[in-house]
Length: 348
Image (cartoon, rainbow, N blue to C red):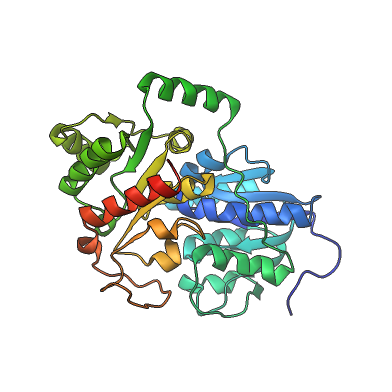
């Protein structure tokens, strides 16, 4: 059985806890449901960091923030979530995340229909906690996987809309920040949570000096406050010949308006790349570990992807979630070629 039967659901729950990139992929799903069912109320169970990015989004009516704790404290997190969900009855729940943690939260939520992935894709027995499943399908882009839920419900995913934008207060902070710099900027992400995705400090240094000389762009190093990112930013700035700005911070909304105010973004496969795509900002994606056909910027700026995942030029590899040791194939020369293309095609 597929499709939504009967009157539109009044109360919908989305379970997607992390991370920033996944949160970005949820937004077109929520927007499409609001277009199809304007009277529905959407509650999102989400972790604290992505919550800070999407809080206040017009398609989401309520949030249950899951505070992630490790070890014995994890049970306290689930107990808090259970209390927050107590007394709530949902007509429909979308289980977009396929891990046990999300499955347990799906189990805690009271919903008539709990829609999840098929057994082959629902890891950690996540399928046990759902009572309906989208049909089995081969690998595709993560965004399209989420759209499978809309297809099952008979909802058109198009137009694909994220609805991410700075608030009025953020736009004022953005104007002040970039006004003081007095130059167009290139936002640069220098670290991810997986070392295998990361580029080297030496390559960033050479690239950022070159884009300053070639295009007059001032590099602004953006991202989170991790020690890895701070160390990389310090080393890059210490060895650059040109100017740069370090703007790392534990604030996803500040990250959003920094990306939005830049002429160009350079990033490996991590959350800020997908935020930039949602904002419509040209982004040069550095891919070697993850498959850009699965996690690249969705249906835009594919011409700017530096594809080190391909083992040779023109390799026709399939969409898959497998990893490769390909960041060594992401060279400075290839990145600068994409920067030149971006400036000609999108940001000139």
